[in-house]
Amino acid sequence: MKCPQCKGKMVKGKRTNLPYESDGESIIVVKNVPALTCSQCGEAYVEINILRRVEKILAKATGDGLVMGFVEYEKAA
Ligand SMILES: [Zn+2]
Image 1 (cartoon, rainbow, N blue to C red):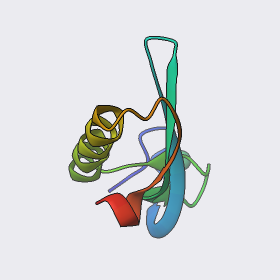
Image 2 (cartoon, rainbow, N blue to C red):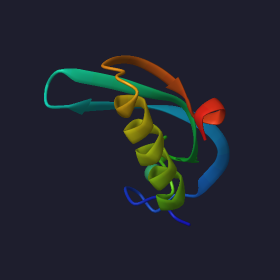
Image 3 (tube, rainbow, N blue to C red):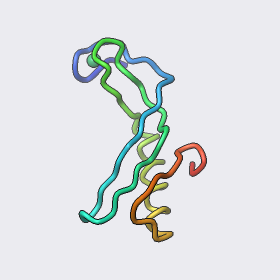
Image 4 (cartoon, protein in one colour):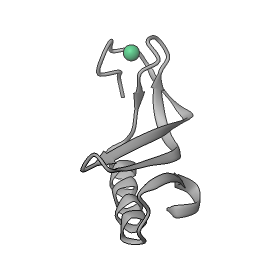
């Protein structure tokens, strides 16, 4: 796929951290999420199927009562 910003080439293999804030009181960072990164501008893009998994991880973390902290993507997925 191409970069949504500059149409550059997206490369696999990089990982990114995704911070999520909800209701202004809970902040959870999902770490080491697999992402595509633009070889030109460095824009990171997370594929939709991975985002869905991230959402499930977050739902579970908040369900467990986590308000602030880090969750490893690989361990939780
Ligand atoms: Zn780009």
